[in-house]
Amino acid sequence: MTDTAIYTAFAALVTQFAAAQALPCSYPGVGFAPPASGAWLELQWFPNKTQNYGMADEGPSLLQGFAQLAVCYPPGQGIVIGTQLTDQVIAFFGKGTTFAGMRVYQRPWTSAVIPDPERIMHPVTIPWRGFDG
Image (cartoon, rainbow, N blue to C red; front, top):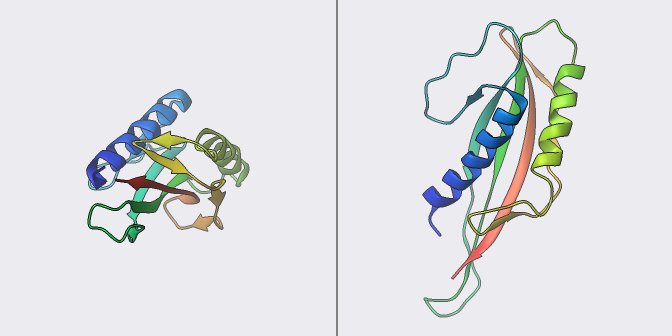
């Protein structure tokens, strides 16, 4: 399994979730202008170190990493708009979700709310891993 195939499959799930919620989504390296009002999503992708589980060159490797899917919206609306959407992100990408041979192996979790002058962000971390080979 390649890093590209893993990311592409995960991004397809994000696209599916965003469409079901009627939310625009920002993807890494793709131009994006946030809407003037309402919520949107921002995806960040973090592949991590591969672990070797075989002595031979052809032995299995554990591929792993995490994604952060942040729920974002303009300031001044409180945090409930964000917590309601993060609940939905956690449910959609729950433990056991699979893509490209990878699996979400732990319940996704939210980090502290990140306020800034342009947006409020609620990052949700989605850990994944799977064997290749």
